[in-house]
Amino acid sequence: MRRFDLVEPLLMLATVAQWLALATLTGVVVGCGTSLFLLPLYYLTGKSAAVPLWAQMILLPVGGLLNGLLLYYGYRANKTGLKDSMLAAVYDQGGKMPFKTCVIKPVAALITLSCGGSAGKEGPCSHIGASLAAGIGHVLKLNTELQRRIVACGVSAGFASVFGTPIAGAIYGVEVLAIGRIRHDFLFPAIIAGITSFQVSRWLGIPYQYYHIPSLPVFSELLFIETIGIGMVCGLVAWLFVDLIHFSRNLFQRLRLRYDIWPPLMPLAGGILLALLILAIPTDYLGLSLPLMDRALSGEPMPYLGFLWKSLLVAITLGSGFYGGIVTPQFVIGAVTGNACAHLLGISPMLGAAVGLVAVVAASSNTPLAAILMGVELFGGAVGMIYVAGGAIAAYLIIGHRSVYPDQRLAYSKSSWLKVVPDMPVGQEKAHLSYGLLRWWKRH
Image 1 (cartoon, rainbow, N blue to C red):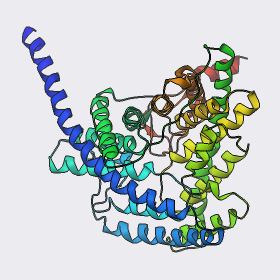
Image 2 (cartoon, helix red, strand yellow; image 1 turned 135 degrees about the vertical axis):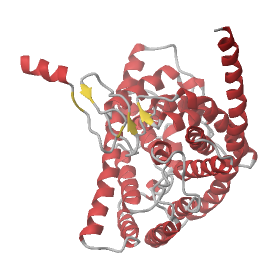
Image 3 (cartoon, rainbow, N blue to C red; image 1 turned 45 degrees about the vertical axis):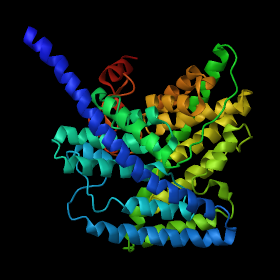
Image 4 (tube, rainbow, N blue to C red; image 1 turned 180 degrees about the vertical axis):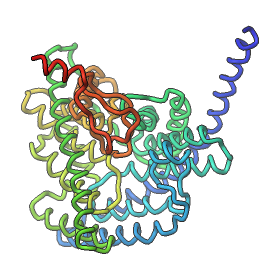
């Protein structure tokens, strides 16, 4: 027993040293890779933001066709049979990803966002992170378990470098793997990789935006309940957003199969539809929509249906076959919704926007802990972690067992009244009423 007592701390020390080296290497490589994507992205979106409406209406269909052609022909280079999904890599592929196609999605995202497609920037960065990390694991000949962990590290590093939230990014890369379960053995390497990637990206000149929320008064029970109310509304908005995404993807897929349409033409059709919609919907909802989010967080009144316009454009963009991230739109939708709700409740619209932003991310991605930490890192301590946490957890519960990631696993049900099959993808498994609730129902 004494021998084991001595061996165990030595093994733990070796584990810490191992991941300090591996995660730091991963963070440096991923930070460089994501920066090479973000720098041209900011340049191109800055240029395209000033184009007139007629040019924007031309760019959207052209961008859709280019997306379709790139994704259709580019993935023919993948002869491995492996999916380039991080969740598939961790759960089904032993941490392996196809390396030859790792640049296809980032290039497609550059086209999508520079032509005005409504999507996010974090998806390509997480993809870059996972692909580069999988490549590092392959070169170092890591075993399957270490390979899975280093891929999760890469996702955390990619996410941390996008928004300048290293701790939240690290937690997100781990928490997103399963609803209701966190792999604590992933946390240390994920945090090291996230912090390293963030520092590298900042050193390479990636700008980050943080927000100042005026100091709040002493804790108020009424304000806490009101922010929970905002969270509940944001949970319903996130529900609509997720269902719109899935409905749009299924609709375009059915149309393609029914009429035997050549796949690259589907995002072209989506681009034409977007071009027609912006005749009625403001172009503020195209692209990343970060200026819209900034205005919401500064307290400027937001339209009550703003969340719907952004959700609709994102659903058409991603559902038709454009490629882009799906978390940045959650930021925008949440900030706009929270701001509008705050005006109705008579509370600070800046606080409402901050709570809404965190709540929609917590619900749509099923990552409440990462979302709460993101609120702390983006807004500082002034926003009040209590208010942010209440809204985030309320939204996380309200959305139920839905996710923007169909491959995300269901580890535990969110309610004792519902039953799920553990470790099934959320897109395949639906929650059912528990036996105890059904028995009570019959008795009454």
